[in-house]
Length: 200
Length: 200
Image 1 (spheres, rainbow over the protein chains, first blue to last red):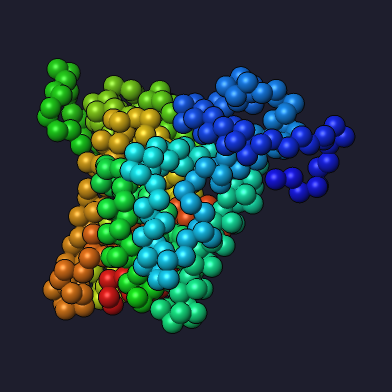
Image 2 (cartoon, rainbow over the protein chains, first blue to last red; image 1 turned 135 degrees about the horizontal axis):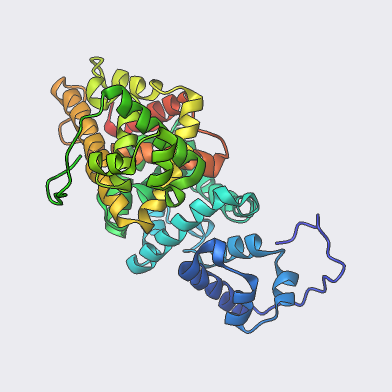
């Protein structure tokens, strides 16, 4: 969470319990859904979670890092923990670990953040380091296991575009079809687009 | 542009020349890029184009319809006008009708609008009627020609998802790769994802 590049003289890091961290992350996402990124303040997080701002700043560097870590922490099962033995199984489990209501809430949340990213380079940076890069590495590992099992040709040109396809599935449904993303739809998309593009 | 559902007693429709309409649409997109949808006012459009607000309201119903029509009008060549004889050729021509600088400007513009859509149901409605539905029909016609030529199986499950894939290509590149969309990238994406997903 801290990279050592910006040491703070007062950085006495008191470890929070994992339960307390989870509470904090859940409160951050709740506030994000209610108010959006711009309007979210560390004061509001402190008030909602009954913690001091000093604790928040000690534990995370600032708002962008807190938001990125909260998203990473409270998302569905980390991709690294999914390993069903087939690529289709892995993709399906990934899609099914959220229930549909949660998925609709998360879609709205991510949509708001996708916009905030372009106004806030520090948020973009934090999301890249703390969320996008670990997730991309997770996809890469999932696909490499499929290559190693002989399910996929090693050099399939679509390999690098799996995250692009899934982002398209999430963004396009509400925009074009005016319907929320749900797990049946994602299942259909994976079978109709992702697997055939990969040559499965 | 008007559907007759909301007749205005003063609606004396003076036809604008096509050149004048083009000027107006270009000015609307310029203002959108500068200020975003929320901040855009009919006053600003009137001032920038030296026209009266009465003319703008007579000609379009309001800001959402003016913006949607401007986007449809000044976009790349309408899909309906592309017919190279192969699906690959059609998709490639679609991608190449914008130059890269224009594409980068349009990506930023569409990103801002994608956000505004969720705050403004009337904008969503106007975009759906005046932009998304005609574009989706254009894709449908392009794909049906390919089916008729025997290039694609009639029931390919990926057929309905072509717009989703292309939207993913546009959204994911700046977000994941931190690079702008350009025509080389779109060419690679079409060859690696869209055509294989369709079974070409």
